[in-house]
Image 1 (cartoon, one colour):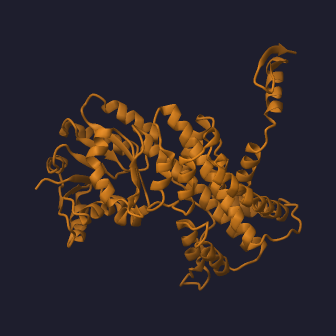
Image 2: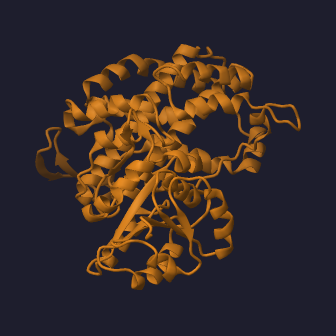
Image 3: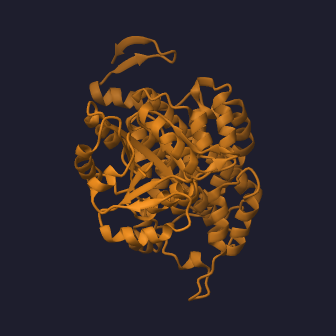
Length: 465
């Protein structure tokens, strides 16, 4: 029997997605560039509802899939994907679909879509979130590409996706690079969320002097309220873990140098290109960058005076409210980037639906996402999520705590790059009169020793010097 779908690439994510599909009853053809991976993988498929067959040769693999074919590639992005497109396209027919399920740069996805126009082959860029566990048991998926490709793939996508109250956490978000762009911004928000959690942990460890297990217990208490989220839940687990070899808290054994794969950085780059602020995300990306400079930080500790003074340690309620405000503001920046990109690339992104497909299966799933979806479906002044009535109310209640936490940390010399950036963005948005007039004045003066007269109503009155 011909396979319903082909999965090429049997690494951690590809093998998990293939098993997920087979478990849901689909016939799956699999292949891998290193053919010796196929046999061991097939041994894992016993007892699954659907059949899985492996093929060493690419032509045999393609030929085993029913037309019009859907082939999901879970291989490294960039050059390997381009090589694979070149190899597989001659084997495909009109109406067949290639899906790139890796973390690809959306610009590359748009270019690949363009190159395949007129060939009859459809190209899909699909963001997959949830890691290996999500891929195996239900990821959140953001699908780009044509309506034809989505109609073909939808039954399988909805079957293997995570579900939130029986709603599959997958959607066709838009054409060409839309799926990969939405996933990129998801990851940018994830960077900010993780950084804010780390900053709250830092306050409690370095300012309040709390033990990791006690800080973990605090996150455990938060996991049942407005801050309920996957990242808060696992923060509780991370801080409770003990290293078996040393008997110390695992968090104290881990090197304080965080890696990154690039998607957070891409979010910031694209936000700047689109003229949008993603300052909380940028702060999180920057924090990861300078965390790698361990030797410099060790040397600087004895050379740079912090000028710190005694300050009141924020209470747990203030920290929780500050975290809530920071999370709302970081998401608002991410959605603003998505909204601007949607207009720039003519994608017609549905922000409410994007919030909904993030409610399960993905890394940033949280209790707030329902509120964000409701905000986008209701009154949305100037298209800004933070100006929705419910968000205005939430921020009015939580920003004072964010302000107290940032102030206390600053006095204590404790860095809060993401929370501070979120607060500054909020305050910049909240002021009708900004300071950019001074920036523009300086630019005009050193540029031509004169000024372009644009009054506060936006009217032009020529130049004067």
